[in-house]
Length: 118
Image (cartoon, rainbow, N blue to C red; front, side, top):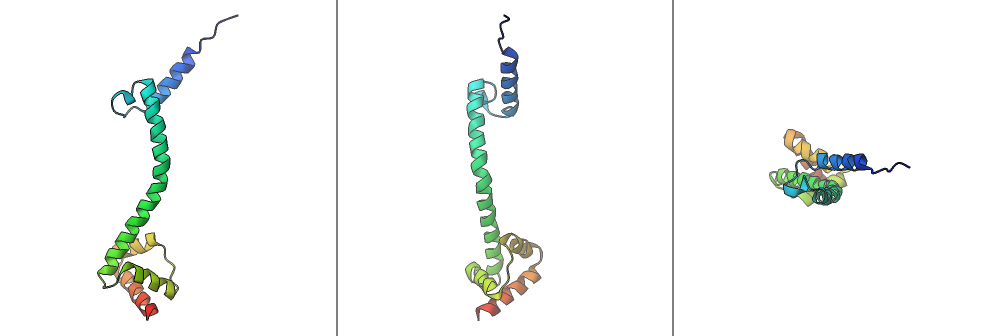
């Protein structure tokens, strides 16, 4: 019976890993064990950061809305409460975009929120 050594499969596996870790620093790009460790760590960080990205963007939108509302003499929590009482349901991403690109429309929203609070 012929002896099967599996060298081509090992080489293919190693080559694939090194192509993934090509931009890494030091031994993490060209030593198989270090490259594998780095790759697995990167996978777990990517998993965590896909969830963190959602939190970071929400915080950014809230900061932008807060800054725009402060310029009109109101604070973020009163503004959001006023919008809720006025029955206006716009998500924070869109509110942030409106505050950046269309300040006159955002002022109208602030006026409606103020009116709902009285």
